[in-house]
Length: 162
Image (cartoon, rainbow, N blue to C red; front, side):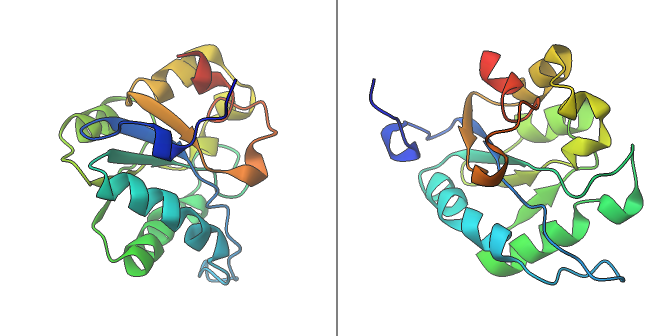
């Protein structure tokens, strides 16, 4: 079986859930000190957006124990806007009504960043229901997070079942 890449997919008009690795280092004030991981995802994000995909990004950030303001994805969303020159919509959850509504109203080329997937313990537990909810916002799944690809988590392994 040949390995497929994003260049093999017809993505125009499709919602594509992309697992990225935006687990970036921050200083004591929560400012990003190294954005290499965000930059590394740009070729995939840009390609999908340019091909008319509705790009939905999911990542973890740190090791929070539940919802923790210091691990919200807001500064990452802003850095992604700055680096990509694109509009990035960020929602305050990764499952539930808000991401579902945002994903349903996306236009071709739009970028949506979901909230930190590790706010839910079900992520690291690879919970099937949590994985199903994550996958439900999209038509296709792309794993662009090489550094986390080995983890049996809901956003890396579990979503592939749906």
